[in-house]
Length: 180
Image (cartoon, rainbow, N blue to C red; front, side, top):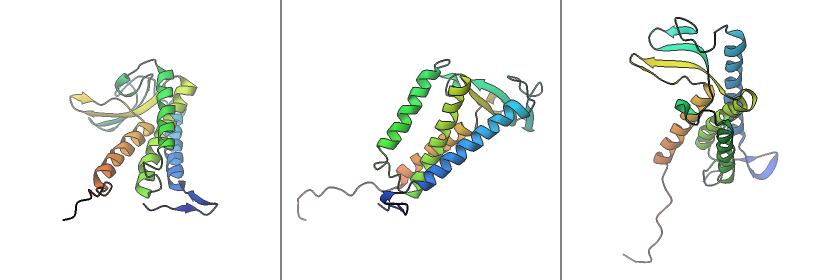
């Protein structure tokens, strides 16, 4: 396992890339939500042609909507439970940081996206009581649930982590004590 040490804290692993990426995802998420709510002029809850802006006709729009639950409205109105899950997830990542190999750059990329997304949506729940969503994708007959930058960070980070998990070699096999 390769580790990078922080020159400011000898002997400690540097998670600088993880923190930077988490901060970037968080900042982009909050800045885009601020724009949607206060500067876009989009009415809440309306989709093109009645509100929002169609970017790619028949496929992608910007809208202003909210979600008091998780993906697909799961746990609607249970913001405190979702905040608790977020705290548990962040605590688990911290507690298992060595097992998750967060000292490795690829893992810092994956978890930086995830952590930034968790923090972005958690702040929305704390401040507004719901999450602000604005990215609307539809595939003709199916409209994907509207989402945001934080959601994207979580999904892309999880997908990248799964990819890395299948790609990286597991631990070497234990010797059985048998000689061949």
